[in-house]
Structures are given as structure tokens and as C-alpha cells.
Image 1: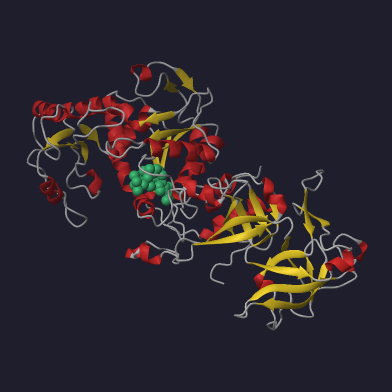
Image 2: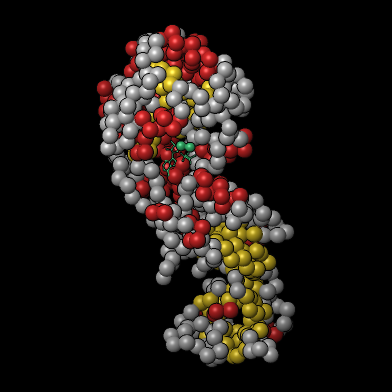
Length: 591
Ligand code: ATP
Ligand code: MG
Ligand code: MG
């Protein structure tokens, strides 16, 4: 395997492993259990990362990057990556999204087992008891207080980048009063919004996140896991470092938006370590640049709107940049992992071209997707001298072509078989009654090869009353069959793709294109809905070669001259074949 290029996270991890930063972490019981901080087996210096999605939607290509970073680093350094559902927000959980996230991570090729086979799948809500105890500890230490200002007052006193905040009148409450009020919050005596628990740090800090951030709020809502046990819920910025610490995460890797949160992340853990609530070494947060991919949107809210409004058929519409969408479109986990590897891990804000994702797909499929001929815009071609040359109008010639251009070492090249008869389907654009300059395909008097078959000479066409070509006429040139000694006896300038009328299969082919016409559809206040590509899907009834009769849902092919296609994993059946275009043979966008 090629050596992976280094990056700042790899350097940090390698240095930590060298120095033994994490050696001696005690791992006993499941995190959050009473036994958790008891003596357990000593985890040798292994890294632990985590991927912490909120189960409020399907994962998208940006999450794929985060998955590849977190699970990929754990795998490369013999560590473990936890899958943790961030369910501190009571209202939005949904089993459909939980299942979808589990599926997506597995499909991308990762799991959350550690060296001992332990499944590291966790729920943030399992730590609510611990988080509550930790909050009481902070109150007891004079490090947190219950603020009963209105939300507007709190906002106004927070200040902004240009001026410091001002202290709340509740800031200097006595410990006993704070404890009593916090317990009143917990016991449901206060309505939503009436009070919050705030960390007592510094209202004049230049980092606004340290101006006494809220750590608990009141929300009288059922929680999918804890039911009605709680009516107060921890804020993400407080909950997250605790989750990481309880799971003994070593490197808590997130996107750059959280950079300004890091001082508070450390503040929470430093205070809890001083109080003996968590054991060292502490997890550390590191930030990398999120993925911005051209021609898609990756906001869950906007993706949800595209689904709910019926603009797309669902979260797995092949035009969606969700992992289920990419999968149904025909992208492979290998291609997505390669893409994440190629874009690398940096701290630089950048836009990645969607074409790079397509290039990764082509690189993956080039050597393994079986080739096939299909006709997407069919017109019939009749070989008028067929009976004369072969003795019968019904005669069929057996033809073969390799299914792959290069067979794997030592393996016999797989073959496709099909037949050529008197009538074949060809692309409408492969015939021109009056050829444009430089045209090398069928026009009266010109010869081309039917790929894998015979050389033919065009003799004319038939048209309907409106002048549309209904049938192209040609004669077959005897003794010119591909693979026979006579094949080179007649030189032609073009070989065209075709499918025999006798053994063609009918198929629905969905020609997908980019979802948006603008490379950055939601940047700078643009109206992404106005930038939807009206031609993002064109459905055609195609004829495809008989080798595709055995196609199973999810099988990928290279349709000669048209690109890479997949048998739709939801709707394809042998009776009603459906193929999706994944991408063309090369990047032709805008050309
Ligand atoms: P939202 O806040 O809209 O619900 P989110 O993208 O923050 O969506 P989470 O479920 O919180 O969704 O994300 C899980 C993880 O995926 C987070 O650690 C987040 O940083 C990471 N992530 C999300 N979007 C991207 C992206 N575009 N590139 C890299 N990582 C991402
Ligand atoms: Mg979120
Ligand atoms: Mg988030």
C-alpha cells in the first residue's frame, strides 16, 4: 500500500504516540457506568477518535470526509473510532436517521469495534447523569450560576466583538441559592426559557464563547432515550468535552467552526479534572477545514427542503450529495475514500471541484466495470443485403467483445456475446443525410464499422411525412467481421456503437447531471433554489445489449462512449431494467 501523505493531524498523532501521551488510560466498564473510572485494563498507547453526528438527517459528502478522517486515522494508527450519537437535543431524534447513519458508516467501510471486539457505539444522552453531577460540582466550586435574566437581557449583556459584556445581576448568587435554583430547574418548577445555568468565567473575555456560556437550559420535552426524566438539557459546548472525556477520546477532531470553542472545551475538562471527576490525560480538540464541494449544497436544512418540497424524490435521490444519494447514483465507497484521501486534511478554506469526485469514481471503475453497448436515442438501421449475403433474412451472426479491456493478471478476459442481424438499433446522431464538415459516421456512400461486427456502407434512409428519419439503410460488406482475417481488408474512419434488434433489451436510462448550475449555489446569500439545474435528470428509453440481462441492482458498467452507469439499487429489476448515469467518460461539463 502506498505511503499516505502526512498532514498536521498525522504529525500530532505520531508525536503523541512517540511520547506515550495516552499510555496508561484506564478503560473499565462502559463510559458513564459507575465502574467507568474504576481500575480497568490498561489501554496501551492507542488513539481514540470519534464521529459524533446528530441523528437529525442523513449524512452527506461533508460528513464522509469527517468519517474518513476520524475512522481512517484510528485505523491507520491501530486505534479505535467511536460512533457517538449526539442526542443532547431532545426534539429531533428519529430512528430512520439513526439507522441511516449506521448504514452509511458501514458502507463507507468502517466500524467502531476496538482491538478487543468491543462495539464503541454510544449515545450522548447516556451521560446525562454525569453531566448533571458535574454541573452541581461546578456550582459548588463557585464556577457556575443560575441566571434568570430574560433571553433578551442575556443577549444584550453579552457584548460583541467591539465591546466587553457586562455581569449579570445574578452572577454573584451564593452557592446554596444557585444549587437550589438549579434543582428547581431540574424538578420542573420553571418554564422553558426562565433560567439557564451559566459557567462563571469572564464577561470581558475577547473570546465571546468564554463570556459565561450557558451550560444547561430548560426544555420541557420528551427525549427518545430518557423519556420525561429530564426537563433540563446540557448545551453542546458543555456536553461535548464531557462525552469525549468519558469515552477516553484522545484526539477530538472537528471542523474549524469550533476553533473558538476550544478554550471552553479545555476549561470544562480542566475544572472537572481538578475536581477528580475525570481522569487525565484529557482529550484535546483539533480542527480541520470542512469540505466545501462545488455544485452541491451540504446544509442539512437545505437538503431537507429539497426532499420535503418534492424537488427531489427523497434523501436517496441520485442527485443528492447525501451518502445514500451518492450510493444510489453509483459512487463506490472506494471512490469516496480515495476522494477524501486526495483532498487531504488542512486548515485552509477551499472549494473542492465536484469533478475530482467523478475522477475518483472513474479511476475506481475503469479497471473493473464491465463494458456494454447501449443505444440511448435509437433509430433503426436495416442491412438491406443481409439475406443475400447470409442466405436468410433471419440469420444471426454471433459477435463477441471483451467485457474488460485488460483482464486481471493471469485471468481469462471475460467476454460479452451478442448477435448481429438484419436490423440493428443505432444512435440517431450517428446518421446524417447531409454530413456536416468532418463527419465520419453514417451518410450515404460512407462506410463505418458496427463495433465488434461488420463494416457497413450507408445507402440512404426512410423518412416520415414530417421529414424525420424513421429508418437508416445500409448494406453489409461481406468478410469484414471483427476478429476475422478479413477485418482489416476495408479501412473505415469510424466504428459506431449499436445493439442488435433481435436480442436488444429495453431499459430505462436515467441521465443524471449536476443538481445546480452554479458552482457555489449557496455562497454569499445566493438563492440556491433559483440555481437548480432544470436538466439534472433526463429519462430515456434505451436499447441495451443482452449481456446486461444479468445485471443485479448496484452493478456498475461502462456504457461505451457514454460513461459509467449503475443498475438502480432501488428500482432495477430483470423485468424492468433501470440504469443511472453516474458520470461521463471524462469531464465534459461546460464544454
Ligand atoms: P447541522 O448542524 O446542519 O445539523 P452538521 O453538519 O453540523 O449539521 P452533525 O451531525 O453535527 O451535522 O455533524 C457530524 C460531524 O460531521 C461533525 O463533527 C461535523 O463537524 C462534521 N461535518 C459536518 N459537515 C462537514 C463538512 N462539510 N466537512 C467536514 N466535516 C463535516
Ligand atoms: Mg448539527
Ligand atoms: Mg453540528
